[in-house]
Image (cartoon, rainbow, N blue to C red; front, side, top):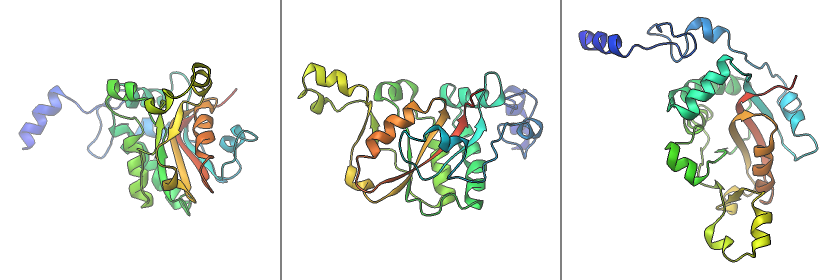
Amino acid sequence: MTFLKNIIDLFYPNLCLNCDNSLLKSELVLCSFCRHNLPIIDIKNFENNEITNIFYGRFPIKKATSFLYFTQKNISQKLIHQLKYKGRQDIGTFIGNWFGSELNNNNFFENIDCIIPIPLHPNKMKKRGYNQLTTFGKKLSEIANIPYIEDVLLKGSSTKTQTLKQRFERFNNEKTKFYIKNKTLLENKNILLIDDVITTGATLEDCCNELLKIKNININIATITYTKKN
């Protein structure tokens, strides 16, 4: 078995995603040096911080946080690119385990009932084959011991519903982009909405505007990365 593993490692070496150096047996995705140099966001107050400030006056949220700063050509960008477009779903598990453990230790998950990912449009899902948030969300769910629900918030419009609308109404509704499959499932729930990157917050805002139509819902946000304005 060791000989076979050595052969596999020879042709398919386990390399650091950032620097391409060989990983030790105890290392995953990144070597210890690159892991140490990740631009981790230090958030202590989940109710009032640079993430919550993005959404101030746009829609109400309870708590918000993000794990890494995202800038061009930094390690965070490489992680997100590999996760979204190169099939590296292990990155979601890696970050979910690290970030989720930190959040759990700081009681971030307290009173949260379920985790919901920003969905992909069905066409994009079919092309890519996976939602880049799935492994991240499932790992958070495992650590927090709360349900991960990925079929209640959907992207795109219901064909049956849309065919009943006039052309102008359809055009108007395209701004929403998201809809809820089962509103009663989320009634009176304290949910955690997750995404990979916050830039302007527009996508999260669109989702939250739909979610806030649900009776007595409270929204919290956690993302893998955040693009800080200069």
